[in-house]
Image 1 (spheres, helix red, strand yellow):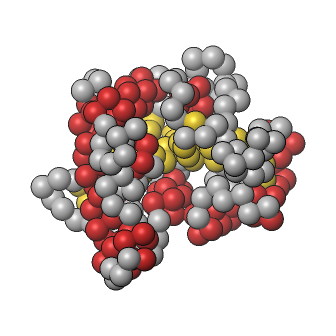
Image 2: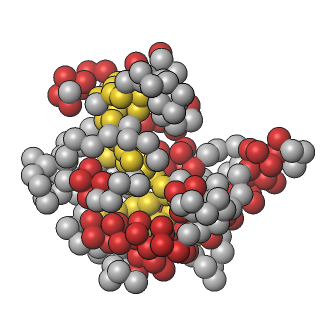
Length: 255
C-alpha cells in the first residue's frame, strides 16, 4: 500500500491523491430532504481549500437525501428499479456539488457511471486520472452503474481504480465506536482499528462488499466527522482526526 507522501505536518498534505466519500444525507443538513445551499457551499469551500494545497481529490457522493433505493424497494418498488432511481439522485448531487466547488475557484468535473452526456462525462478511468493530474476535482456519480451495489462500494472501487492513497469516509460522528454512541453513554471511540477486528465486532463501518474490497486491496480508510469545520483538511494533512482503519499487520504503525 502507498504510504503518506509527507510527515503530516500542519498545513502540509500527507497524501497526494485521496478519495472522499460523502453521503447524500450530508448535503441536506437539518433540512430533512434535498440539498441545503449553505451546507453544500460549506463542504465545497472545504474541498476547494484542500485542493489548493496541491491534493488531488476525487469524490463519490450518495443520493440518500433525495432517494434511497433500499427503503423504497422495501415499500414494494422493484429493487433494481429503485437502485437506478437512487443512482440518478447521486448524479443530481454530483452536479450540484461540482457547481458549488467551482464557485470557490477550483475546476471540477462530474463523471457518471450512467451515461448522460448533457450533465456529465461518462466514467472513463484514464480520463478521471488525467483530470486529477491537472488539478481538477473529479466527482463520481451514478454509483457503480449497477443495482444492488451501494455508493460505499462505488467509493472503494473508484479509490482503487484511480490509485488513491487513502479513502476518507465523511460522516456525522467523530469516528468508529465499539457500540452506538447515540444509545450508549459508555461507547468507546477507536483511534485505530484493523479490518479484521472491525469485522469480528460487526462495527458496520460500511457495507460488507466495500469493506472487503478495502481490506483485500489494503486501502487504508479514515472515518471522521465532516460537520466539524476544517476536518477534511486536517485529515488530509495527517492530523489524528477520527478513526483510521488498517490491515492487521499495520496496526502498530498507525496506533
